[in-house]
Amino acid sequence: MVVLAAIGGFLLYRGFEIFKDFGFSFITGSKWDIGNAEDTSTAILGIGAMLFGSVITAIIAVVISVPFAVATALLIEFYVPKWFKTILISVLDLVAALPSVVFGIWGYAVLLPLVENWSKTIEHYLGWIPIFNVPSGIFGRSPFLAGLLLGLMIVPIITSVAREVYSQAPRDLIDAASALGGTRWGALRAVVLPFGRSGLVGGTMLGLGRALGETVAVYLTLNLVFQVNFKILASAGGNVASLIATKFGEATEYELKALMAAGLVLFLVTLLVNFGATIIVNKSRKIV
Amino acid sequence: MENNQIDSKVSETIRPTITAKVEIPLQRSKLHTEDLQVDKMVKSESGLETRNVHAWFDKHHALADISLHFPKNTVTGLIGPSGCGKSTFLRLLNRMHEFIPRAAMAGEVLYAGNDIYDPGVNPIDIRRRIGMVFQKPNPFPAMNIGENVVAGLKLSRVKTSNKEALIEECLTRAGLWKEVKDRLGSAGGSLSGGQQQRLCIARALALNPEVLLLDEPCSALDPGSTLRVEETIVQLSATMTIIVVTHNMQQAARVSDYCAFFLSDGGPGQLVEADLTTNIFSHPSDTRTADYVQGRFG
Image (cartoon, rainbow over all chains, first blue to last red; front, side, top):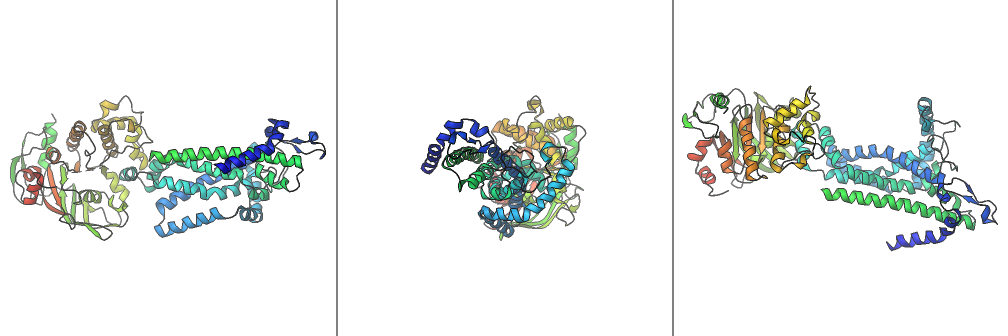
């Protein structure tokens, strides 16, 4: 709590001048121009595009990872034998512990060429849907790739929360569904999934929090371009965290303040998401 | 009321395992007034039968050598003190037993002449035809009353042409229709415990089972609700075979045609005796049965 307050206070202190200078346009604007390094008044700084990038990659990550995590959690809790269950859980823990830079490199080296091909296929068939349209014809390091990678990264978090909630599903209801001639999958769908819904939402938000704040993996797999890019297959985008990582080394003093302010925004957003997630997860525990 | 139904039923009420011929009034319900003549040598062609059934949980031998016959369209009460294996036995009858990790069984459970534990038998089919109601009322919380009734159809992907008619029929048979007909859309959990239990019975009836297993269906209910559930059991027994586990001796006397007394003397649960309910309560052949039904232990 103290550390949280200290970090928040520090970011607010360092970034305050930026908020004073740009006000709300710092969040909505999508131009990042430090102008004349000597004269701070020529700078136009806005993280709108980056914030949008954070959100869209995180959403893509969640959309991809939730079905996968639910399937994994159900598999672990209800289908596989005990010895295999132990193995699966340790594998998931291992994936959760992998440094994000490793994910990033793997994403860049292995996933990128694959995703480029998939993207071309998707664009070919579904290009008439605006978000899948790529007028520039440049695929590569797109929000889709970054989102997919983030999705893989947050699967373990969501799976572990989902698994915990599913394991608490009332035995007598599962029995009731089975006694009515339900298959195992039928019983899971009728009892376990509705029971675990709110817990799953909480776990998803925890994953969302991590996806929003992820830095290195996105830095490596997303082409930093200052424009609001909702065409998820096109090679342009960015997120707040990778913006900070990219600019930090060579930033002017004034730009540094702006990065601190961007950090504060990110800090608040992830705090909010995590806070909401905790509330929802706890609430779903109490029902049991 | 419903005398015809009961009569035709009683004439079929035949039990094979006991050789004596009895001619006694059967006080199985207020509905019943006729004298009963049962030739116990003749075997009912249908119903449910167990032969030398054993059950284990891991290495613990829970039930030993239970052979029982449940004649078609009768109510059999399974009585005995806690831990004697009644519920385990009940769960063996529709293959719910195998959901318990490390549970095992031996012996045969014959339903319509076939062993339900044959390798070729799909346990899901068995559970559709041998319904079960549990101790604690457990309507599905995510579904409303109407959806709960037809949940079994949804679970087993059975299509029904007229869902509303089926819901009404099942709720009527379970004695709940009048109370809930105006609020089929409200949550199952909004009902009282007794209503919830009858909803669970209606839910089991929707699959039109021929056998209904009830595991202490009234132990979580107040006396008024208990009475309603008992009435429902008696009415249903006109068209289906019912096996009910109960701790309540009065209940066993009120609803059942036959009683089977289970007992465990520290070892596996065993069948002490099974007979017409009137015999079990008036002149049981085993002194332990007499002691139990008169409340001297258990």
